[in-house]
Length: 183
Image (cartoon, rainbow, N blue to C red):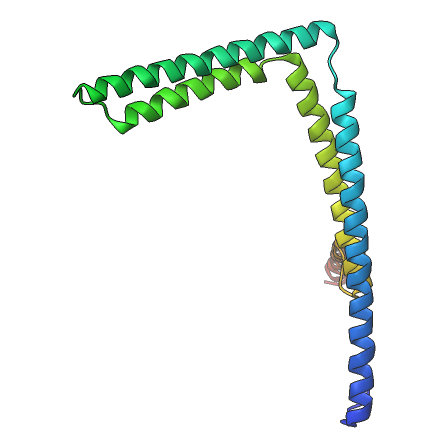
């Protein structure tokens, strides 16, 4: 690398570097969009693939009905406590919050306890893991295109360093043995 300060040459190098970075970023955005499209397709397939059978569907409807009843009971309790407050009874805001929190917890338990919900969640988690893998691949590819070290590069350097330390230790052990025999 020369130490020249020719403005024309510096401008050309800067332009080449900027073009390379723009190309790398463009490729990264394109890969990101493709990964997002694949995720959406996978997610749609997961939801479609998790359509429950008739028994699971019946279980889901029952659980949604029970959840609805829980919400309605909470709404009734809230209405009663509002009337109590209107009649002058001391009703705290925390009581209102607690009514809704208990209702929400019970309703969510009703819905989330179904096999259909579990199957759908499993499919969504699987799709998210695939998306994470694709995002990791895109980021590693982008780093490589920009000339920056990737996780693989750092891992390789680490492995080489460990191997060098092992070799150095073996040489030191042999040297110690030689010194012992000479003394």
